[in-house]
Image (tube, rainbow, N blue to C red; front, side):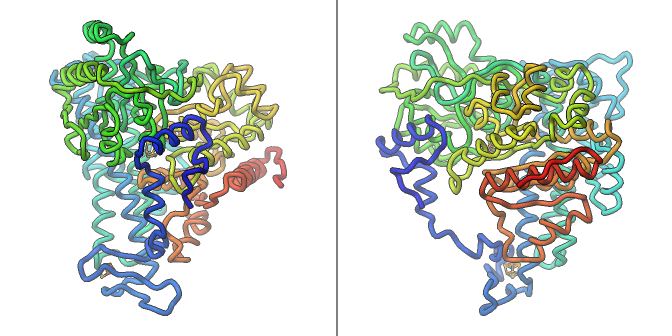
Length: 627
Ligand code: SF4
Ligand code: MSK
């Protein structure tokens, strides 16, 4: 239960800014979570249904009240349908983000996306070849136009399979073909998922969940993969570069602009505008030393990965950052932006600006960014932020910033290994590195802020398990100091030796939420090099503090790709033991991987270590017992 005197975060800036917000009378996510208690038990178990207007309905978990909804749907059907709709929403979110990138690519090709350009021509050509677009004797813009058209086809239903499933190992594709899981079109799978969960369509909980996996795969190997790859073409492939993290990245003597959301289409233009000499001169004329752009959440991760731009915080820090009083403007696009932010900002001088035609928020000014006007709009909003500097009241920046290194794209990791995954495989075979875990996802007020991320990561690296992370986890572990090469000292002896030899941290920042696909590409490269399927590798996934529908979709495409995945918070499925059993054990027979739920990160670390050691044993490698 919420107690304002208690520490709500493992981070110093989190706790100090929470106290400041309390002092300023600002209502935060923790207070609203407390006000919701007790949360609905039927909903927590997935046993309530409001799909049609004969309802809403609920099934009594104790067997005394109704056991079906008005239409006759039982607990298995209702729980499965609810989960399937979460997965469809997550897939739609990432994939629509990907579509926005493809539209910018098409706009670059026809000249309508002013200020955007092809930054990585080699990657453009590689992708074009993968999509069957001929590149010989063609100009980059011609290739870009044709590639954008080919990618748009992936969204429709004219394909047998989305193009980039061919990146998965052959054995994995055979599994998908055998069980009808190969995703056909990105929009098609989401649309079919919504259709099948309409009243009176698919009333078999197993076939519903299989379609949910196909839908999630259409995101992981389709929409999200397109988002990442096209972002690399337009904004550059990330490479390791130093940065700073935590609320200390805000500067008392500079104009502070925070970008929040997910889509680099907006934040890249804002970052360009912040370099305008005219605007920097204006900032100086207003008494500031310059313009300081920082990020939160995933659009921050996009900038951090490619430009080394500093990161102020993750999901649960987004309200607290405003309580520094130092943010002159927060610019948002979409996803994970709490509708409370405008109200929080109203307690300070902060100006809030929404930019997407598909995402509006209370108490925010709306300045719509489109590919044709984003460059101009960015200059306008940054100017408004600079003008707002004069309105600042007292500022409280609670900590000094922490150093970190981000930018570990697959290309960068393979580059650090000398151009081939062989050294990583050799280290795994020799047992120096036991395996790897991809830790992903959010914060959730049900869990002490960043406790799950930091505890789990610490235990894994101590036991020679390489951690790669994305999204809000990546911010948590950077703040905890795991993302500098010197953090190798916190790792077990084997991992420490490898990291020290390569001068890399034991926890590699692989990007934003859509960038989880980089993990899929990396594990595919490892599986191919070893001649095995992904499910045979000593790897696992984890989302210790997840909250969003997108995170369920990511977990589902990890599992469907053969990666056993741990979840911290329990998804709303406990109303059906059939669904629970399928997800936590039955799927092993289908895709060679399952979900596991464990809120305690200490126990989760043991589970993940056992999983990895078990995979090692099955591969004929040395295996440790985990007590
Ligand atoms: Fe009730 Fe069935 Fe309608 Fe759901 S679909 S609200 S269970 S009648
Ligand atoms: S921002 S989906 S809270 S990771 Fe990608 Fe963070 Fe989760 Fe949003």
